[in-house]
Length: 355
Ligand code: SAH
Image (cartoon, rainbow, N blue to C red; front, side, top):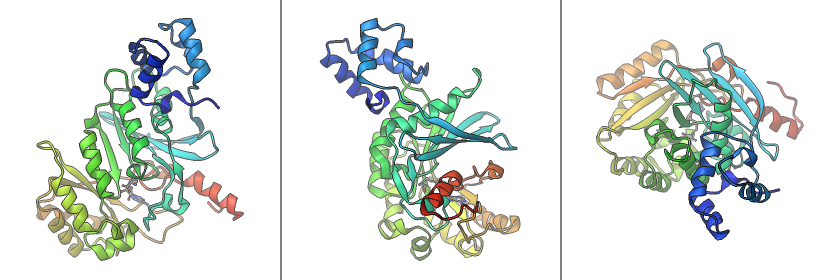
């Protein structure tokens, strides 16, 4: 099979052209066709000469993702199940709000980090997505929109750990954020969420200007180690020291995600520990009431319990936001992006698909 042209970086494509004696400005034209006009064949690139179009078609494919399923929630959230060329599948979620349209994007098929409450973790890591498979989620979702609607925000909070797939994620971010030949979504409107891989966080903050969200989920090492095995490799002190030292421009904050699990990490004492942990870090806390799923024994706190936790943080001066579940009737809420993939995994193992 021919290589997918979107798996080359802009620089690599320029090198390809120059080597074949084409002017380097052609790279910008081709990339604009791919990422701005979203064409699916070289034939449509009408400002290129016929021989160049033929040469590109002989060397590359323009891969696409197959929309295997599309489910729309009562609240307008749309979940896409995309099929990849090798039969794996991934999910993306389009979340309309008053003044923004956010796409939640996957960076791996499955995930190898093993967080105790997460549905994707049940799958284990299948494989990293390539740069083209990440950016194609944005292109395919955009193709389903009418002309006046555009995706305004991207969150890398779908399946997988983006910083465990660093190189491909960075390639995709370049396609998504470049304002000249790329999709042109400003890095200020892109948020990457991580379990807290410290060296890669440092690298990301040096190499990009995207927003950072860190999944914290517990305010001490003992509990965090139980919920998130990664904490044994990068314990809280190391993670928080890293966050404290990040070169954030003025007024920019790190988002800390905290999934509230009933009776596990939701007491007033946990809230106070969390506030103490965040002192001195420009931060805001995104509280995500746990979204139940069949693979998990955890439950969601009641509204009163959520409010109690929230009030303690508020009194401690922590900036908070409680995330409403979106698309929970179509299993598109945070941490639920596994439905089809789980069924497939079970089928492979010969277990009856019970969900
Ligand atoms: N690997 C990245 C991005 C994945 S998911 C990360 O861990 O940050 C985005 C967020 O959803 C993470 O904070 C994750 O911990 C959280 N999450 C996972 N399962 C969840 C569930 N069932 N309910 C609520 N949030 C969940």
